[in-house]
Length: 187
View 1 (cartoon, rainbow, N blue to C red):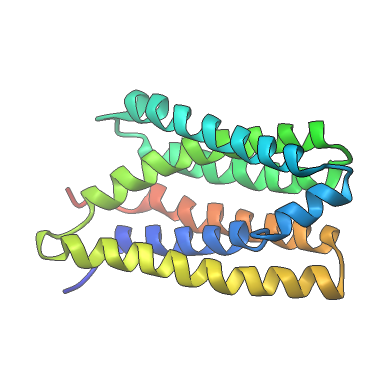
View 2 (view 1 turned 135 degrees about the vertical axis):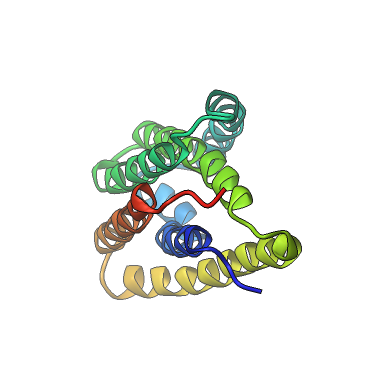
């Protein structure tokens, strides 16, 4: 059982993305409190992210369905994610946090349906369950490691260092995924 070149690039880019995204993890609540947020601000900021992401997953999925430019859409989503990750550096209030969370929701909703479609299209028939297990399992492992690393960076350095590290990693995910624009289509 072997993955296609495209599937390998997709997994590598996604794992880098999960690492960058996962570094915030449970620190989100601590950061929200640091900028003056309370339990309701934390709740509404996270709810904003989830609702925007969920609604736009559907819209973006419909818009890119059967289109040939999914790679470009995915790279755009990853790039936008990096931009909004750097946005955490400028957050000084719960309202600004809502804005960053909304932007991150939009970015994820742009990138994820395209990633899912490309990954599905580039799986060999004998890899259906294993490839999805690999994708999901790796994302959980990488995110778990990222939680720990994010905590160490924040504890020993600062939130600013965390956000810069996260943003740089998100840029790396976009650059890795950018390679897909040059890979010949297999299907």
